[in-house]
Image (cartoon, rainbow, N blue to C red):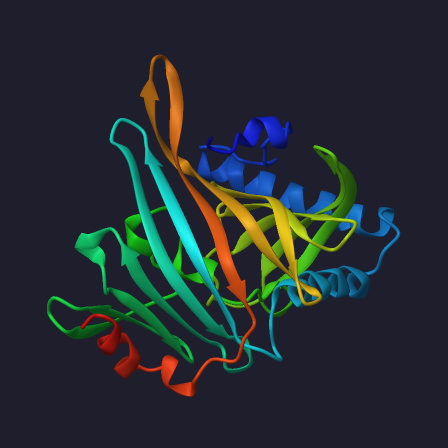
Length: 281
């Protein structure tokens, strides 16, 4: 049964200061960050405390001392078009900022793959036997998921906390943090982040620089793996576009299930173009 976002997290999804008029939006954005600036000291924590919170959230789901592999099942629901399923094998070497993704299903895409080396993501098409450079920002297999969703977490590296407050998210006591990117390489420049008291990210909202809500991501559960954590399920909702069905706006969503997680050491050859080519033969 598909996981019900509203049942698990009965909370409003609203971002102050959004307005279709550009001039009013600019004013509202300034007011928003003035409010954020007041919230930080009111929360009783310093900027360093909030940065440490992000570092902990990263550390709990990253694997700098080992490799990581798992099987991801990605179910895409497009309103009016139906459901499709992609199964892929994912291999990560966080210490070297590398990852490999091999598409196993559906058959029409079998053998396609992704390889991240340094700042470049390569996409391999077994039909043409060619590699094309893409980026972490691009959609994964044309879904609302992005290539950046499958790599190590870099919240503390890429974002600064501009506000923080205690809140409740379903059954979880959380810190709600408002983040702003400190570089231009990120997929989304603004973010809201719900971190539960155990340090794990439970929900995030991705925004454009203008304050437009782009995506909502929820992580209802994790599995523990040798002192670190791997999400069991992830739900991604495309808030930017939707389709009216039976009088209700329905958004595209992706549900990701993670299985066969392992921290076993992988051969160096896995993180290469040669490996991607061999897996399609």
